[in-house]
Image (cartoon, rainbow, N blue to C red; front, side, top):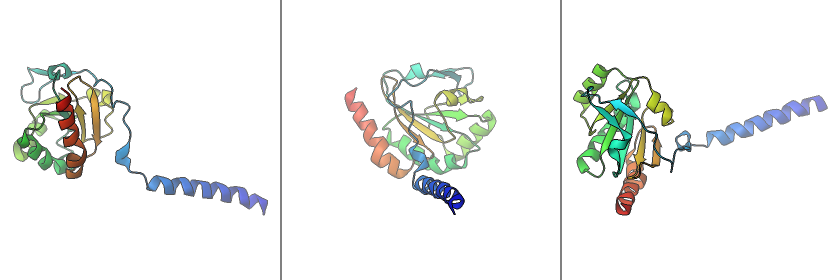
Length: 176
């Protein structure tokens, strides 16, 4: 009888951890970069590869960095919201085209519209790695001091925009 109690206790313990895990939201993965300086980078621009874009180009501005790719299904889902946000002129949106082919990315933006002031190409994913990208899409709100203030894992949603991102943008702009 005792030899059955130990495996039963282990089974119950594992079951409890699994049940707790099912209740967690995978999009609420805390980022160690929140309230830290955004990693520096310098990449070629998607539409003008002879020109570069870097984090330092955004000094003194509140801005969004949206990590996207033409092969990303979830990027397509969030894209109309980014288009609408760009039209509101609340914050400039910059794209980080992640592990994508230049021709595919340009075609995708031509078909769906381009919400970005510009997109930089991260063909090898090194900048994405520095930013802790788990997968695309991901969006970062960066303040005027170059500090990451918010990270959206997965597609931007209307709820995230209305309840978190836009209020934080407005707060950060008041602080500048």
